[in-house]
Image 1 (cartoon, rainbow, N blue to C red):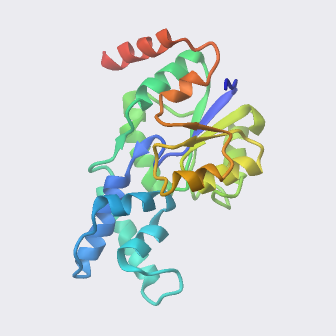
Image 2: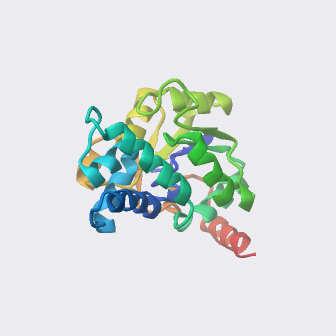
Length: 237
């Protein structure tokens, strides 16, 4: 199915950036500090989409309200803040996708629940330093309410002077889909991201689904495959 957005918004972790290795690493570092053995990476990866709360629960079995929960959440964030760029990388095809989007003249941006003190340095290193500059960035502390509230998406759309229904949002989490639906913004499910159960995720109600970033181009009209080849040539230079 073809879609004709006036702007494209992306989630960050699990959509543009494979940050699970560092998130899982921080969770295991926290376990080691508690005298516990590290958990297998594959068992921690699905929790990356839900943030610190989920990873602290996976690592230590603690939930909000437990006596030591907040202390350990803050410790997890401190550990992650130190190692957030050790092994995090853009997903394959992201740079080619962004080249093609920019060649098309479409504005694009990032809407993430990640706190700005963590997200902005990563955006600098992984994107801006490579001359890929999002026209808008909305972080978890930018608006009064994070996703699944629609406010972060409507704030980003307003910044781009585009109505929400004329944007698309690409994300891998339930909060991404819920926020999109709440503001009537078409949503593309990034099935390659940190989705614990794809069958369940499909029931969230996303309008479209992609198995790799570059597939988004096939959904955009007037974007022939030679644009992808041109993007590949640009990236390789």
